Image (cartoon, rainbow, N blue to C red):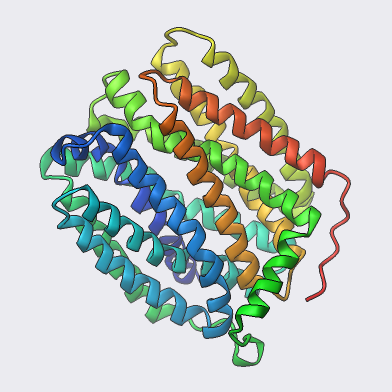
Length: 398
């Protein structure tokens, strides 16, 4: 079975909602700090707060999608996202902005956690990995366009319009979703909402050694990517003097690398399987992590070298995230919504931890960025080698 192109495009737009919410905001961070009288590090923490709420909310929203169905969960999340975006646009101070971002993350989480479960309703194993890789290519348009659009908005209007545009994108996504996507979780397959059952299901996921290995592998790799996302505005704009409306072009190189890896993965995963492609990606991640360690020892590396090394590291998530998630989801075929929630929580939770750590280590240099990236990459590889390398994939009992 294949998705109709319009359905696929709609899911890609919705999956790109959180990348838009994160990446369109990046060029405006220095401007927001000056406008609201806050430090760069404090405004960076509004981004990691988004990631933290986004991660934790999925623990409850994933099971809710197994109870209410995919359509109700996604549409409710889109409504909250629109409201929160307008609240951010009107924020008079950092507290209001932080509140709006947390509510925005809650709405974005409802959408993001449901999409992999929706795809899992339709596809199995390697076909799921292939479909998710292709979906990542579509949604990669969001972080490619978002910082360019955000930089343009900041340069020509004001940062408040970033959030108005985000509300408009969510409204367009909602209109398309209502029109072209039907419910994929039929009534006979839905679960009853029971906190005890939810806790037990999460217990199964948390104590599954191989499943946790896959999730730590993907989550730690994602953490390296988010440490770059959180700190790169300071490194590129403030430290290296890149103009805000030019920042998006440099950031876009990371997205192009991610798209290239995702495209190659989508082509090869059917023939080689998700497991072999994951190992291939982790081999390259070892090289990228060691490169980041080497850069951390330089006093003043040229901008081109920092940009190229970062793009190489971030791009490898196109191999690691989709394939590690496929390995995990294959283990829990009857708990797709809950498993998707757990995967998203761990992945973005580790992203929030890594981004917060990079912000707290802020010392006026590029070293916190590349150092945390290297640590995350090496930890991802260690998790796979320790927990997954010799595993035989057998679905867990429901």
